[in-house]
Length: 514
Image (cartoon, rainbow, N blue to C red; front, top):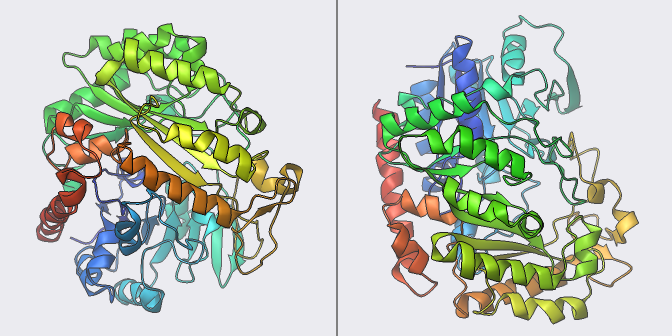
């Protein structure tokens, strides 16, 4: 059956979880009477046949004269080959995503548009996702960024010719950017729910993403999410609606494990207590969840650690960013290195023990970072006895904004004012290769130091399978005990690619034979 809207989404990472964005807007489109098919694992579809003949089978099945638009959710799409090559060394592929975020060999990009418009001549190609307007993909007709819950309805009506007042921005070569309500302020998020459809082919007991709240009460200098600086009680979903969604997923799929798609889940003790009292404690089953947390708030409010564990926390990711106090303060993370380590020890040894996996993210090249200061703290966090089960190390991602190739609707303070923090971009051909003129740090050195340290961390027993990897490995059939005990030398890391490929084939067959 051909559909009104076809959405491609997916992640290139070898473990399997579903990005929630495409399914969230599919729910809203269906509520307004449109037929929708979401196709996951898009990077693997195009990797299976770089000439895109396999992709053509999905287009042939679901695109017809009635198809209004085909969307691509780019947030987690990377080049699969690059990810697989670098996954044992670094969790983030080194790619020039600014040129092509669709994981497709550039030589064959035009084939996608040809396949689609041959079957539906007036069909539009839409690129969405958290950073869609940072890209410049010449086959795309419409760039859509932000919380698109209500915008997709207005955009779809505009494509139908029923919404002449839709606000757009021309971005060159005939494409437009959508500027309508990218914060979804006209959408009733509090009472919303994502409903998984039979055509999504959810696997039994699959760990799923869920939104508990949106936004963050903080304004870190490197963060550009649109709902930063919210009040503590803003954008928290209604407890009755949450209970209904948890129960529906449990009854339909047996789901009890979740990835919380929250910017900062523990942004207030009041929020955590409210959710425990009104949601988790009232469910007839126990959920397990994996989420982003602020470590400084756990230090300030130690009682919240017990509350989180009672609520079902099984994996925490902390954006610690730096053990250089001056650098951390410069980007809004003002907790001393001693307090960082003391708090982690208390969580690991006294409160959460082995029941919660702890992961930490660090950024190399922040303001005040020098090669010497990094060398003073970096060896400590990659040691076996440092109280994190896994570490992620990244060079600072900072790209020079360019009006011709970058139409970002919101930006971080670092992106808007790099010179205020000492950064410049001397090479126009490499817009992401920054230099800090004050400290002498540069992108190449930051990347080299992060990749070398991460390799040593793996040898020291810092597990590659951190907090957010666990739900994806559960979806491949591993037990949590196996995952927690695994390290870089064990069978999970070596062989979960094969399980992923088998799962892919099962999913592809279900979608093509439905």
